[in-house]
Picture 1 (cartoon, rainbow, N blue to C red):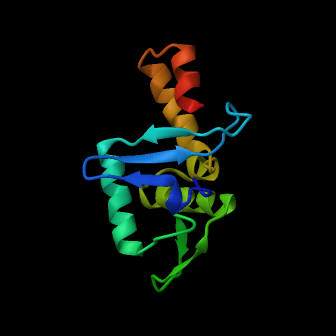
Picture 2 (cartoon, rainbow, N blue to C red):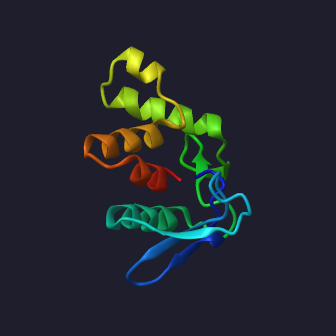
Picture 3 (cartoon, rainbow, N blue to C red):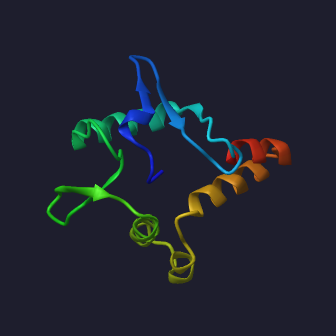
Length: 126
């Protein structure tokens, strides 16, 4: 997520696709286009409009006065997740255990609870 560049997205009137340039399951870095859900597309369009990002890193930090800063790093993602978790009222122990991979772990757990098979989970999680 933090390495995603504006140039890695393809926006049409009806869809947004992301180019996953490389992953652990793509050792040759051939890349793969991924479609976003409609809600994710809506939020991404809102971010692009609000941030006016037109090149380079897509997701960037915000200063306390709302100005857009440089690119994010993995430690900042974890802090953002912790801040959101705390705001939502989660207990201190849960908040302490949240990190930058928490959404990926949560998605895998949700797939498991919906009776997805291991190959399906592995494919979705890449």
